Amino acid sequence: MVPGLMPVLSGAVTFSRFRAEPAGDAPSDTKRWLTKGLKTGAFEPIDQRTEEERAVGFVQLENADATDFPPGSYLYGEYALFGFRVDTLKVPASLLKAELEKWAKAFEKENARPPTRGEKAENRASIRHMLRQRAVPNTKVHDVSWNLKTQQVQVWAASRKTVEEVMLAVETAFSVKLQPLVPVAFAASAGIPDDALTPTPELIGMELSNSEVNHGEA
Image 1 (cartoon, rainbow, N blue to C red):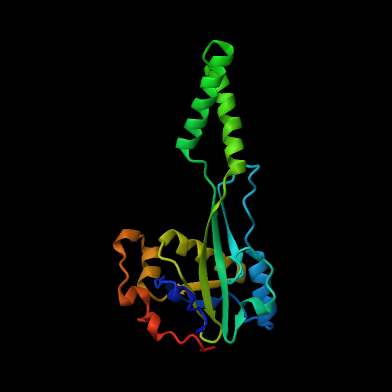
Image 2: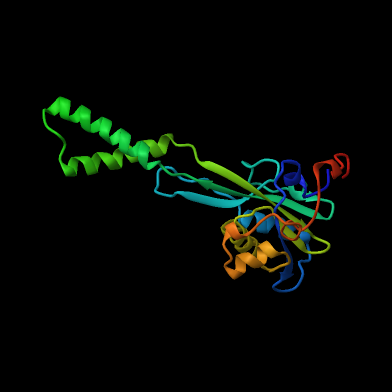
């Protein structure tokens, strides 16, 4: 399989392309530099005991739960391939309301009176906490392909917010500056809304159909 083209096989063909420019001298040990950067920005799961609703960070490309980065997990020839994972955890307002109403009815039946506003507020907090413990985070993983020879970086995402977030994570972890090379990246920095972007060849950055992908190519 062609390095960095996994999203194409699943139908996701929109990506942003950048050129990575080092902030200082080029690293003397590329593997150590890459491993250190990936560990610095590694994904950490949401702590469901807190009010945290979002968690982001780097993961292995082929294992979204793996945050250790031996070179064999991300180096493919002249490419560094890894994932940027985004987890969100929110208790739906409709579910919270339904559970609170169920509790209020049970309270009134047991105590022969409706709960006070204070009692509702107290139990709303405890019910929300219970629902958070049961909730499963929504996970999305966006592929990142870095050609270490040409220093071109591709972020496989269409959302402006996601592109900006991955840009910042890469720049911070690896001490580089990413210069946009395709329209969706320019749009991210220019404030163009996502719904104004369409998957034209210029936005996609290349024209590739599934039939053109050589599954046996290394």
